[in-house]
Amino acid sequence: MTIHSAAILLFLVMDPLGNVPVFMSVLKDVDPNRRKRIIIREMLIALLVLVIFLLFGRYLLKLMQISDPSLSIAGGIILFLIALRMIFPGQQSGYGLNLDREPFIVPLAIPLVAGPSAMASVLLMVAREPDRLAAWTVALVIAWIATALILVASTYLSRALGQRGLTAIERLMGMILTTIAVEMFLQGLKKYMLS
Image 1 (spheres, rainbow, N blue to C red):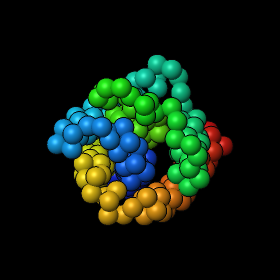
Image 2 (image 1 turned 120 degrees about the horizontal axis):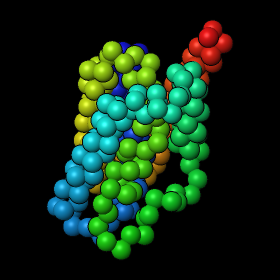
Image 3 (image 1 turned 90 degrees about the vertical axis):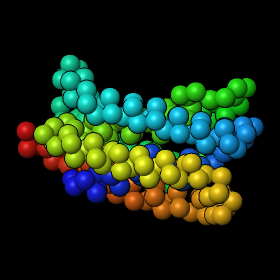
C-alpha cells in the first residue's frame, strides 16, 4: 500500500461528506462562528486518538495476541459493513443527535471521525508494515487535513450540494470502500491459508 492509497482509504473511512449532515444536525443550535472552532477542536481530538492507535496499536495487538491475517479479515469485514451503511443508509441513530449542550469528543470526534473502522485501518496498516510508520503518519495527516477542510466548510457544502448531492457522493465513496474492504478480506484470507 502506498501513501496515496493509504490516505484515500483513511479519507473514505473517515467519511467527511457522509458526516456533513450529522455535523450540521449536532451543531444546528451553535453560533456559526463558534461552530468552526468546535469542528476544529473535535478534529484535533480525532487526530490525537488515531495517532495514538497508529503509534501504540501494534503493542496492543501483541498484548492481545492478534495475528495479521485475523486483523486484516476483521478490518475488511468492518470496512465492508461501514461501506454498506454508506451505500444503503438507514436511520441515523446512536450518535447523540439530541444533545442539550455543546458536543465534546462524542459524537463528533469519536465515533464519527475516529470511529472503529478508522482505528482498525491504522492498526492494520502499522501491523502489516511497522517499518513504514512515517509513511502511515503522513497518510493519516493527509486524510485528516482533507476531512477537516470538508467538515469546516460543511455549512457551505450542505448548501451548495444539497442533500441529494451529499447522498450521491457518500454512496459513491461507499462503493469504492466496498472494493477496498473485499481486497483487505482476501489478503487476510490469503495470508491465513499460506501460514
